[in-house]
Image (cartoon, rainbow, N blue to C red; front, side, top):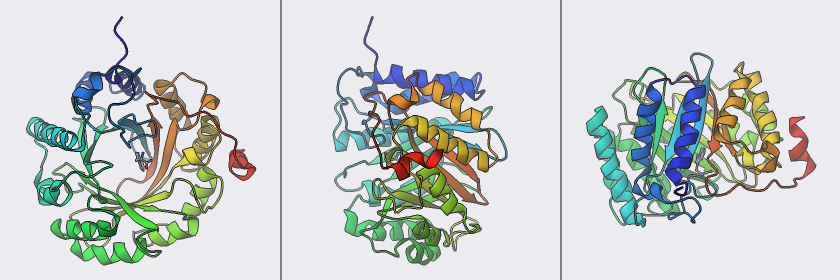
Length: 368
Ligand code: TRP
């Protein structure tokens, strides 16, 4: 039997997830898109060490699954992918990503006008680590897959990240919203509040989003409550409760940071239309069984179906949940009028399972 490749491992997980969410016949279409997005490097056996140290996941698997739960409608399955070249180095990785983008755009008629306005800013010079371009494949039942791309605002070094965001927003006719973003996200200085992703929905719809993500080092609930004021309609107390339930405390979160994203749409350009908070739950739990309890609690309070989470977990892994930590990588709360809900990010663990760890009681007990 031939050894299991990265593609075999992750495609099996994706098929099982799609089966759980009733994707039916569109599953094979989705898996074919996924295969292409993974790139030629994904043929390599997972028994070998990863050819590219992707930052998509902690064990360098260049794939992460997520399930977006909403009050209205069925959950949406998504996959974050960093395409891997045959001989990966920053240049071949970026070249591959750009040629895949062109292929996808030709096949699905995806608009690349926004991408073209930003391309030279993020990818123009020598490609920078940790990444050039990431993709998200968004799978809705009975619809064509949708795509999102992520640029790296650290591409010219940390000291230029806000300038890069500013210039990008200006080129996308969102310049008027930059002061709101800077005022709310930069409160503690650019060394603690760092732009980490700049994302575009590759869609011609009026509600196609532009998203700016900022990582808040050493921040707690009150810091992100202040950041969220830059968006619209964030009811008081909601973010604090989310931190307490998912993170076990109101913070500060001194391991991996809380991340905020602001979402902008073309018809609402003076400030963000949506705000999301991402909590890297894997750093604040001893194991995934505790993470599962906490996420079930988050879903229950938001009036969402907790059992769907359990089915997603069993599609992705058959290991006992208390035998490792990091399967549930992040949980996020999406707010505002665009698509409110909860998203859960699941690791593939193709290369490695992080062993459970002992934790201070204040973190570990919070779910009970
Ligand atoms: N693995 C990286 C991190 O944890 C990037 C990443 C992947 C990420 N999926 C994410 C960041 C979801 C925020 C939310 O930061």
